[in-house]
Length: 349
Image (cartoon, rainbow, N blue to C red; front, side, top):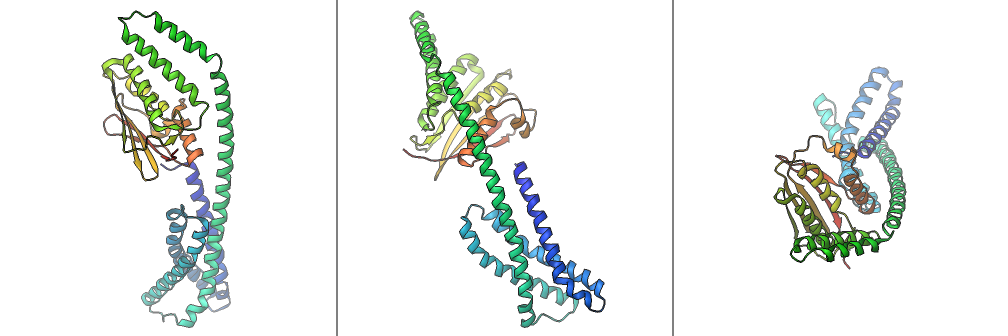
């Protein structure tokens, strides 16, 4: 899904590219104004230059600003020596093809050498400005991340202070209720104990930046068992960890808000309920998470999920983007399902 930031970045790149193209083509074609048939030659040759240089630059732009974005900047600069030569060879090939089609003489080696200067200058001009633009975009993005992380840290600190207001009173009360339940109602005792465990984990997670994967999954199972006690046969669930390092550290309370959304918006309003599937798979240096639910079909668009009143999905997306640079992917499954997936880099103890 295209984000507003990606669209704005592409627009800026296109504007810079066109500006460089027009400027360089005008400079390159200006000497023709002083020859016979000057005006016509100027426009024809300038248009031809624009078309050929544009076609030759597009593969280079795609490689450096789409394909190789994950490479270190130093290495990408070094690769410009290779792509710059490839750009000029491609320009020569297109120009020679044009000359053949128009019945014009082919460029000589001397002409190729003479034309190398303006073409190399155009290449340097275009991609220097694009890299400068990328630098400022990355700087703005980093500053935005810092601001959001500060806001999240402040909010987490406030939430932690709120959570610490007499937490033992809550646990002691739950223990008292559990002790007062008759022995024959053992199921009720178990539910109270599970509820206390969820509160205890939620409170502890506000003080930790990472928890082992197995703890997060156990907490999630406990939460879903409590929900199943509420919905009965209307809720079925499965939590699967496929070949994952269970000691890997992940941010706490990362999965529960997404599962809660599934319960609230898909399972609860559906007459027959539905199923929730939580799957964790390890891929080299990342753990891939997916939460898939059935139930009441979602009526809106994916954008509505991020822009609605609920904050669970939005907060998770912000946490992943700010902390790991990862994106949340939402898919509307065939039938009635919604699938939310994302990756988290593995951090072993």
